[in-house]
Length: 164
Image (cartoon, rainbow, N blue to C red; front, side, top):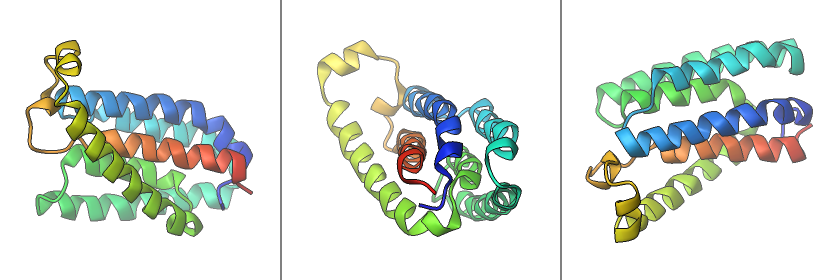
């Protein structure tokens, strides 16, 4: 892995908390709050310069811009929601370009697992009774935050153990 292990260890607690927030919010409201997107960006901006080599940290801004542009186009065509696109852009600085061959299949696997789990769990009466007002139980759309947040957390956990 190309993400420095020490940097991943410093960022992991914040990434996990924000990822859980995003997953919960998207399931409950079918919405990823802008505050969560900003919190993830703030985490990168506040901690990144101290734990990452400056060149790696700066490339994160390029990653953000590229993913934001792609996400904007995908939102315009109706492929993803705006919150999903914004959160993916906020995730982008954390993903090293050399790790894309690891991250993208992992993201695909997390999306599939999250989709299947969500579709199964929402059919369980006890679960629905425990969270009766969650919008994702009734909507046809999948709450992508349920996959995006955990995928970034898994990546950071792997980097903390196996990073350079």
